[in-house]
Length: 138
Image (tube, rainbow, N blue to C red):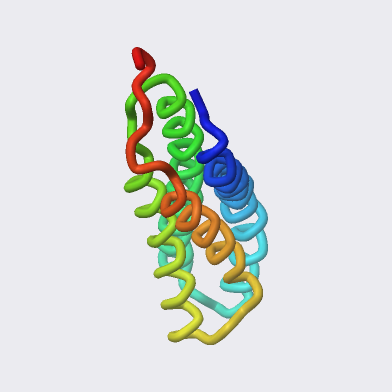
């Protein structure tokens, strides 16, 4: 059962999970639809476009899986003694590290908020989540 103490981190994690799921669809469908014609117009070889497309769509799938894992972890932690701090922190820190690396290497782009926002929310949620979740039998 959820306590008052973990309502805020859970809410942050749910919002971040929804952002991950929604951004995965936007990334794979809308993002690729915008990128492919630009590469074609730039005379990028078709096999290179296909290779980039494979990685692009794998990233979208990974974003979806991470978002679904956030929802699953939160559901499982409500039923038992599962501690979700570490997985939430890992996902959040990975998103923050990626966004920071892109900002440093490529320069700031508002699109990076797609990674910063879920990363920040999950990192805060993981940090605030109680260290031990009470078991269902307690």
